[in-house]
Length: 249
Image (cartoon, rainbow, N blue to C red; front, side, top):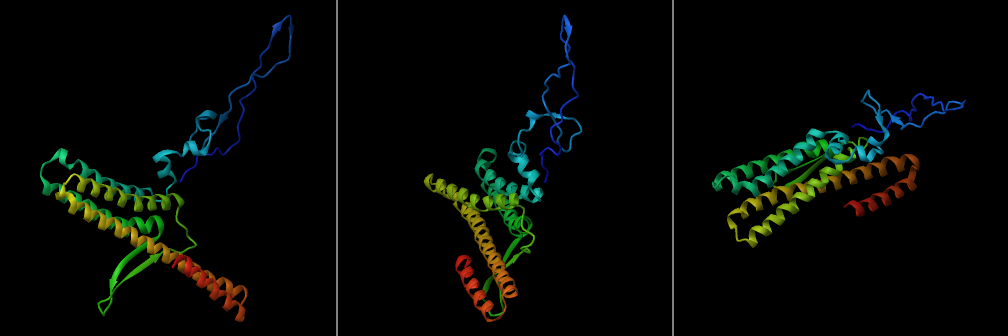
């Protein structure tokens, strides 16, 4: 993650003498010059107007990927999701083979589901979930989260949650359009896309809630007991745990 904030303060060029010859020789008066700002990563000074603030230099998609700690994972997260919607919308312009279009969209949806659950979620926000069946045949959710002392990159976290909640809404809008146009042949594809996207959204939402609750419980059990101790510390720890449980549970 790079930054274009100037490392050195503004440097003025060497003074240039301007002698006015109007009968007498006056003292040298330095001419005002535009300040020159040195930016990291470039050996050539650039005018100050080129980057007036950090926000100007870090704006746009290029700035997002420069600030990301895992730009490749962020790229593929959006690539698979955008590709699935694009192929679904534009497949009729390139081929009339419905089966071929369906296969392409389903493959992209499956790749996006696997990448989001196993790669992007773990890399960008440090979360992972899956469903497990025990010996009695009962299924339950299993959540994993990274150490709270290693927080996720804020840009990665923001872009991940935007993708997680935005694309199910887009597929829902496409479902409504298909129903209004009576294009029922594409409804199963949209329903499958909604199942994949909504499953990831729900799974990571519960994984994030579980991670916050674990962090709060560990903080309450370790910090308060170490600071107070005894019977009073146990009572205060119980109060904190119950409060955290109501907030995150």
